[in-house]
Length: 240
Image (cartoon, rainbow, N blue to C red; front, side, top):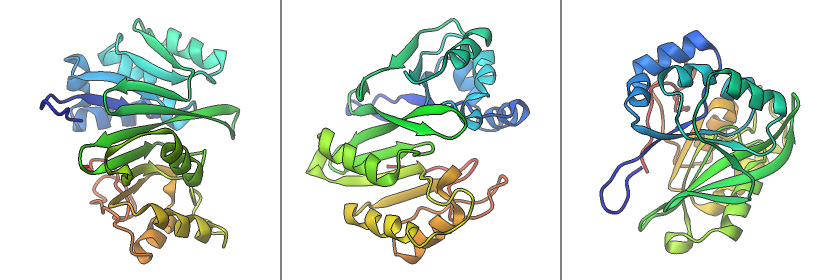
C-alpha cells in the first residue's frame, strides 16, 4: 500500500499451507527476498485453518522476527506451533473488534465458530483516498453481509462509499449451488463496488455468477494452477 506521502508498505496476508508449494511460490514472486530484507512489515494470520497457517515455518525461515498479527481465538496448540516454528518476533493478538495497523488500514475481528475446531477470523479494511473503502478477506467465514455491514457501521472512509472487495468470499467453496446463494450475489450489488476480485474459497460458480450479474470482476490469468480466469489466482495482481 502507498501512503499519501508516497511511502510504500508491504504486508503478507496468511502463510499458506504445503511447505514445498509455499517455498516455490515465495521464490517465484520474490517473497523470500522481501522477507529476508525486512521489506514486509508484518504478517497477518487471518485464522487457523491449515491452508492459511501451516506454512508459517516457511515464512519464519526467511524472517523469524516479522511482526505477526493473530486472532485472539487461536487455540493454545496453534500458539505452540508458532513458538515451535522458531518465531522470535512480536506476536500481536487481535483482541478488539477494530485494530488499527497503520493510518488508513484496519483489522476487523469477527468472532465466529468455523469448521475443524477453528474460532474467529480477521479481515482487513483500507481507506483509499478519493475512492472509498476496500475490504480484503482470506476466507470470509463470517459472510459477505456481515463483513460489509460491520465495515459500513463501524468505519469512516472517503466519500462514504465502498470501492473494492477482494479475496476468498466463501459462498460456494465446494462448487455446489443452493438457490439461497443467489440472494448473497444479489445483495453484494447494493454496495456498488467498482472492483471485485475473487480467489480461494469464493467458488468458481460464484465468480461466474458475479460476472453474469454484471459486477466489475477483475479477471486473472490462470497461469499457475488456477482453474478459471474469473479468479485472481497465483501470480495475479489487483490494484486499488
